[in-house]
Image 1 (tube, rainbow, N blue to C red):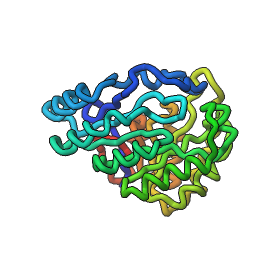
Image 2 (cartoon, rainbow, N blue to C red; image 1 turned 90 degrees about the vertical axis):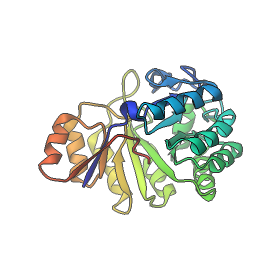
Image 3 (tube, helix red, strand yellow; image 1 turned 135 degrees about the horizontal axis):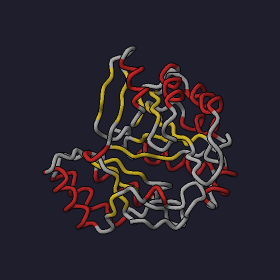
Image 4 (cartoon, rainbow, N blue to C red; image 1 turned 45 degrees about the vertical axis):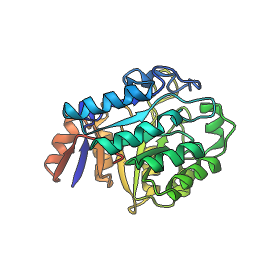
Length: 265
């Protein structure tokens, strides 16, 4: 069985900071916020959630730009997340960045469905890309704190985040200690860095091993069907919005489940 994820209109991405990000990292510079629905106030988020369910939505990703501390500013949304979970059947996935204790406690209290968590295994990458005074151990600590609060945490590793070169990805895998599910993304080199070498990507995938369910996430270059097919050959169990060629290839060899939601659920 292979799982193909199509979040689309039923599972949109919401930015709590609109188009704003305090870090403006070189690989993004806020452009990934452009395609997200901008909702910056709790009452607005609740109204959106209620209407979204009425019109056939099944959930949403809550994310946004980072603060100077490298986290999505979610504190003021904690109460409304609880209210949404209490009054709707929507699934909620939250992208936190490096979360504070207050955010972690609030997410646990709200009983949100999953947390998408970026794991970075290189201090060089943290400093050069995010410009943060943080270490890989800080990221591991945040990951463990989320899990210790009983939250479902689905780690993400962006292969080639350091301008398309491997830098700490193997360490990131080791720090995760065989998660049940792992999302592998890759740098999208629009105006920064270079295309991630397939050999490098698959070396990280092989490092993960068969204990973890590997999904190719949404943050990756599109149009690389050969890359997607090879990932499936090597044991990847799912892809977010695969190419048509990949779908055609997979349908001849596997049962395929099309899922209209986020891959982190």
